[in-house]
Length: 312
Figure (tube, rainbow, N blue to C red):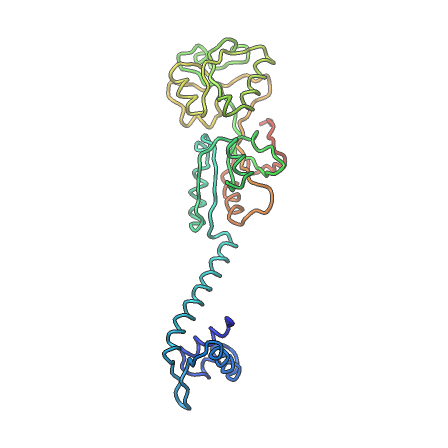
């Protein structure tokens, strides 16, 4: 049974006239009649009662008309859906994001994407950077917003989404707050709050190495898993810590963000958009394009996996 036979049959059933049905199907009447005959032979029953003046559906024809219409409608719907998927108009994207990305333009980008592509379902999960990397490589995430140091894989592509300066966060009653600035030598022996060594081993080791290089080891009193927790602990007077500029939006009133003397080279916190290397779906491409519009680094073409501090 061929698809065209179903279309010819539906045309004849609706027109109840072979001549008009042939015109509707843009073929001559004899070939159309031959295809209907072949269809009847294959089904083993008459679909039409024909006389010189009248064409009428048999009972079997009426039943088969429902089958033919449903088949064609299902096929048309499937074709339409496949074309929409190919154009990136419908589908599903699994997105991971770093907690602090909430304080960037990422939420605005999500709102804009949903407005432009309402047929694409977004499955959004807050995840630590290391977990995002593993999920992307395992095919469990389509894209993630994570720390740049977790995109160092030859199986991943990445692009900088935001890059902002680190500040030293201190309680307003700390002497540093009144002075308005601080440097490496000031940190020696100070109570310090850092990211969790368990969850951010690379960041932890790099920070410790910097302290040792400058012989200004602080007194680590607490570890935190997120920037928000770090700020909350600082607000409670438990210590101080480095936070990126984006956290200023949610900084407690009693916490002050101080410019830090980085010995001439500022340190930047970069969040990168990362995805698995290879063929990129149209839906993912649309998402990357929208993110680029909201990125503070949309003019940069990052080909490597690491973002180094740049002069501003």
